[in-house]
Length: 382
Image (cartoon, rainbow, N blue to C red):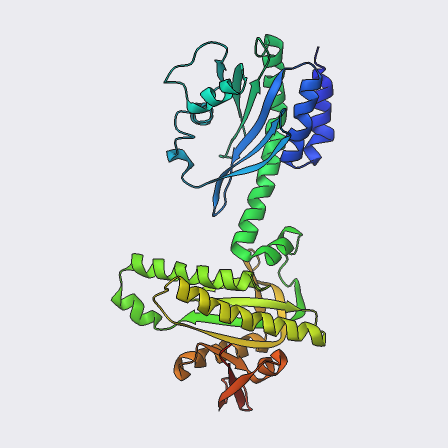
């Protein structure tokens, strides 16, 4: 006889403090050890993420735990979902039960046939009701000779009600993390999640600053339909994102046809050199990726190193996590000369010297906002 109160107490004390994968990895064996012929235990939920539409957390008795499953967008049109028990529960918000001991027909979804071949005897799915518009599902499979008993179904239904707020809380945390990291980047997003959200909550830091934008953006918009312009812009942003991410940087802003990226430094001599070399490596990588991707537009990249203000600015109820300071302005001014000088990459004199890598002097200019002329350098072909 299962101890319902003990299972509930475990979920609300220990289980809820775990991640959802660890929760199902713990609850599945508890139910089986209590006498339930449980073959599979699965929690699934919708999520908001640029790449993922749903998450599933699965435990199976045979073969050990299964890692988290992330379903990409377009799930609703895939054969694995259409007509499945999961679709029934998700769309009707009612339980689904199917005995698998008898013969199955062509109208039964493929997943039921696959589970039956593996020895499954019973399938039960139940919705998890959330306060928000999103929702979840609990799906369980039995491998016992007679499937789930009436007591099993009653227990599972009760546990689904207990698991609903726990799953929703974890889902909300996943949503917050996805939004913060997708819109702000992983490092900056984590700062926001950690509570750095007060206007004026700013710190002084050092970094290599990389500005990049598409050349001929105005002419491109005049010559191409909006859909094509958007396609080109997204292709460029993917190129820059791959290059920056793979070289230790983070894109802080997408700005129309350009980006602002940071390569943080601890301020030490070695840290300054590393940050500038990472930024230069990212600039070279972007050109290489663009050639392989046959990106149809040229772009310029400017790099500078310096001190900046990093944090929250804005109105009382609408703030932005950004960077400010003369170093940011200089990086933007350096990049602006890429088009004028027909150079894909330019570095400020300070950044060029910090890289310690071969460069060539291109010009000396008085940058807007500065009194002294600044030499600008282009990297030698690597």
